[in-house]
Length: 164
Length: 164
DNA sequence: TATTGTTATACTCTATAACTATA
DNA sequence: TATAGTTATAGAGTATAACAATA
Image 1 (cartoon, chains in turn red, orange, green, yellow):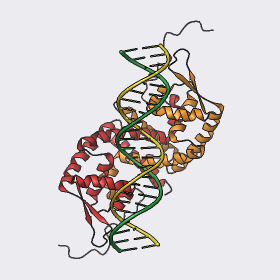
Image 2 (cartoon, protein in one colour; image 1 turned 30 degrees about the vertical axis):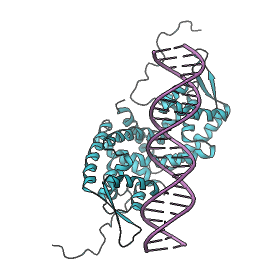
Image 3 (cartoon, helix red, strand yellow; image 1 turned 180 degrees about the vertical axis):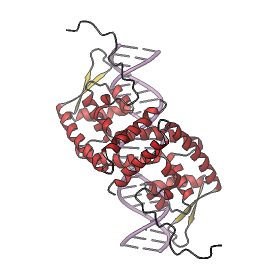
Image 4 (tube, chains in turn brown, cyan, red, purple; image 1 turned 90 degrees about the vertical axis):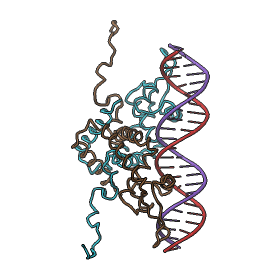
């Protein structure tokens, strides 16, 4: 029968570098949960970096793809970014209203629109993209360059190997 | 001066296993975006696996942590799962209504409640957890066991090395 | 005064159905 | 009939403020 009250708290060694797997249990062993936690960290950082430019993550993502793929149509853009066409509309509305992109109806098929960035859009994109890259790099200081490319590789494998 | 029109289309070698980086541009080089895409794949799979048990991902996550940490309080649970206490309430309401967990007020501090799973909750948890593990494993077939543990390791590094 | 659990609310992101104009 | 863009709307997930009970 222990009659002496322990004067030291039980949890002494809990402040280690790795997340406390003993505490959270089964969840921590799952890839999906770790994926979510890491995603949240980076998403928050990217969000904060894009905010000063009045851009959301989805908005700068669209802008970035249009920069690299001038003339892309909304349907193709939506498919590539895995977002619904209907949700893309409001993003493009925002970008067009702010004179960052142009929607030009195609002559060959007047149902489609060619998307291109304006000079203004290009400038804002470059600034925002640089800020975001920097913010992400700061959050990834714990990983070497090799680990970062390896990580991207592993993540792509998940997406690619999925039965689509 | 190139006067000969190329009869072959420019993009011939694009159908490789990796996502088309040339197409999506800068986005694909960022860890955050790849993280999101991979997360979506796994989250969808986990969601589908939990649905037959009438469980959402957040609900089974809570249940799982309570199983491994009987007596945990809502505040601590919320902190560990990084969700708001206010949002946790509705999840716990759901679990309690379905007789999967118990909320027991503590005598030492009547503001707090000890959370424990019921026998029923334990059973459902084990079934659902197994189904989810299987669903996740199926989506991770493209990765070896070593790659999976390495991936978790890298993801944890992102979370841990972040300035908190 | 501070903390725990709670309520109500708002905001973002995502998903679905239906419409229009073109093909 | 089918497709591209659009509209409206509903559902999740998340975030914030304020409250009652308790410390």
